[in-house]
Length: 230
Image (cartoon, rainbow, N blue to C red; front, side):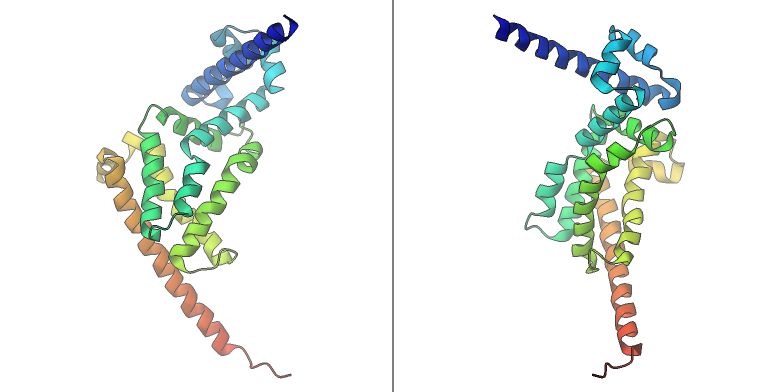
């Protein structure tokens, strides 16, 4: 009897936590982090303030949990790892990852992308747990793939500088959506497959060109270095 009671309490606690998290995430995606209070969330979720503090520690803890869950759902590390480690050509790997992200963003999970963008731009959001838990492990996988495409070593600063340009086209498209300028809005009308093909081709061509420049600079540096004398 005691065991059954404890099991029900744990289930009820998990359900309450999930209800708070989902309610908070929806509110944050619509209003932004600065315009949502714990009282707003408690009222919408039909819980008391103590439940929020019990499950998340604080308002910032709840906001961090909302960002982590949204990132986990949109950018699925298991799928990214499977693609990066697959035997398919590097160009196809890039397009497969883009297709996965674009499909998630155009599905019922699209509002979670808006939540992530609000979090990245809002001083009220707590980003450190998000980066440590979700962003950095995925960034490392994408960086490995960028190295495979470009030929630039993973630990080279030149590749790290490339990473911003790799992710910015996707984030721009998904962040602005229908508010894109008319000459870019046609991309938003594409299917995830069509958009992944276009953006992926741009990314891989650009990465290979950066790799060519890196190799030329590396050869020039080696040629200008004085010979080693023992």
